[in-house]
Amino acid sequence: MDEEKQILVKFVTKLPVELKVSEAPVAVPTTLKRYGLSQIINHLLGLEPARPFDFVIYGELVRKSLEAHLTEHQLSAESLLEVEYVPAVTPPKHKQSAPHDDWVSAVDGTWVQEAVSGSYDGCARLWSLSSRDGSGEEASCSSSWKAHASGINALACSTTSAGHRLVVSAGKDRAVLLWQLPSSSGASPDLVASYKGHTDSVEALAISPDGRHLASSGWDGSLRMWRMGQQVLEEAAAAAAAGGGADGEGAKASSKKRKVSAPSTVAPEGGLREECVSQLHGHIHCISSLAFATDKVMFSGGWDHSVRRWDVATGINTDTYNGSKAVYTVACPEKGTPQPSAPGKVIRLRSAGSGCTMGCTSCS
Image (cartoon, rainbow, N blue to C red; front, top):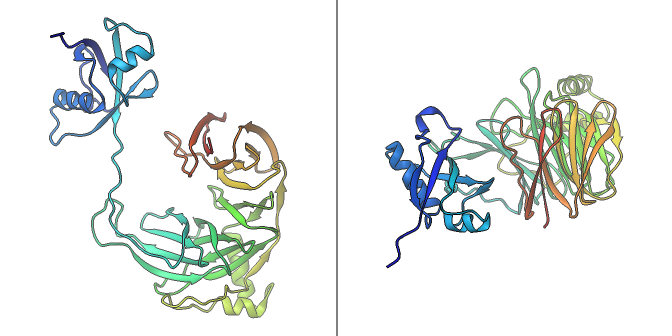
């Protein structure tokens, strides 16, 4: 019977010192895959209970045997193979379902203990989350309101410099609306401002890190910039106090708080009527995703197969990344590995300069 082939492996990692094993070469069978390698690391570290690890060889996650990697890279079994190990991301566990009356089309989890969801019934819902670690009480809907006459496509949340919580919603009715959450539970938000100018369904929203700029885009191929934040909130409050503003009766109606259990069937009117500050021109099709990297830099992705970098202050398209398929999502995390998310089949990560890494997803 043939002897089992072995190879010398040096395990390396960027994890804290308590999770580092000796880098002295270890002989392991070439038939091992991720699970077997994880068992070795747990044994060398003496971990109890065991922790799952993933492994990287030549920039690729190990999803086949070491022998297959040797063959693919035309390496001999006598080579010293360097293998990096990292914590494995375990599949999420289902905790609770919160049914909506229609498709859930948007979710924002900006706040630690709360999340906002939107669905095709035009309703937005505020959820109280007891904890992020899966312990404690289950999530509960603390507020629900009819935000749009038709389906909601996008949501974005922000907190002003004075601590007021704002929600921006966008929908198939071509409207972008700014809401202020009330301090008391069981009441619906006040409509602060309406951003109207889109001529087709609005697909994406993004709020700058400082909370002063709002970007919206959609199927009309336009990317629009708007005022946002504490200044708009104060102007809306002043207009409401004066009994007028852009729409006096609407402003008064929007300030009335409605109970959660029975959202109205018609989206409210009122609040300030904000004009578009600027339009950023470059895309020639639906703009499906927006992401701010900093207060001064923003990215957009669209169905014209491009991701574009924008100077927010000047509105200039400073760089363009062209692909071969429609782009569904772009993301610019502040730290660490980019975390794009969308129903596409390809994820592309790019260095966008100035310390910003951008991730995007698209159809393959």
